[in-house]
Image (spheres, helix red, strand yellow):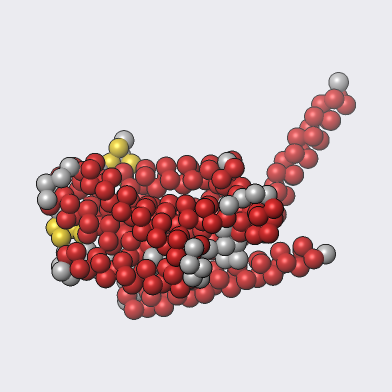
Length: 335
C-alpha cells in the first residue's frame, strides 16, 4: 500500500516538474517576464498604474490596436504585411459619421462601412497578387490614397456624431465590461481558434513557412492572401468605427501610426516577420505589453515627442528579437 502511495506521489511530482519545465521552455516565457517587469516598474513609478480602472482603460485603448494586430498577425504569418490599416480606420470613422448624419440607421451604417473596407482590402490583395506589386509598396501607396479620400470626404474637418446608440458602442458596458473590450476579446478568441484549429489557419502557416510546399499541397496562396487583406481591412474598419464612437466624431487625421503599433504588438508576441511562425496568444501578450507601455508613459507625463521615440525603440527591439529568433530557428533547422 505504501509503495502504491509513493508511486502516485512520484508520478504527481514528475508531472508537476514536467509542467513547470514546459512553461520555462515555452517561447512565451520571455514575454511573460517582460510583462511582469513592465508592470512592476510602472507600478513603482506611478501608484495609479496597478488599479482596476487603469487596467480597463488599457484594454479599451487596446481595442483598436488589438483588432488590427489580429489581422496583421495572419498576414505576417503568411509572409505579408499591410501598412494601410491606420488610413482605413480613419476613413471608416469618417464614412460612418457621414452616413449617420444623413439619417441612415446604425446597422445599415455598419454594413456599408464594412463592405467598403472589405473592397479596399480586396483591391490591396489584387494589386499584390495579380499585378505582383510588393506588399510593402502596394499598401504604402494605398495608405496615402485612402487617407486622402478620408480628408476629401469631410473636406478636412471632423464630422460630429449625434446618433446616441452608435455613441454607446464606444463607451457602453455589458455587465460592467466595456463593449470595445468585449469585441476585442471575441475577435481574439474567434480568430485564434480559426488560426489554430481550422484548415484555413493551417494554410496560412504553410504559405508563410514554405511557398513551394503550399503549391505542392494544392493551396491557392493568392486566393488565401487576398482574403487576409480583406479580413484585415474589415477589422481596421470595425476598429475605426469604435474609435469614432469614443471620440464622438469621425476624424480624417485619426489612427496615425496604427499599423506600426499593430505590427509591433504582433512581432513582440512572437509572430515572425519572415512568416510561418506565431500564435494568437502571443499577439494578445504583445498587445497588452504595448498598450501597457503606452499607458505607463502617459501616467508618468512623458512628453508626447519622447513617446514617439519610445515607441520607435520598442518596434526596433521587437524586430531585433524577431531577427534573433529567426536566426536561431534557421540554425536549428540546418542541424
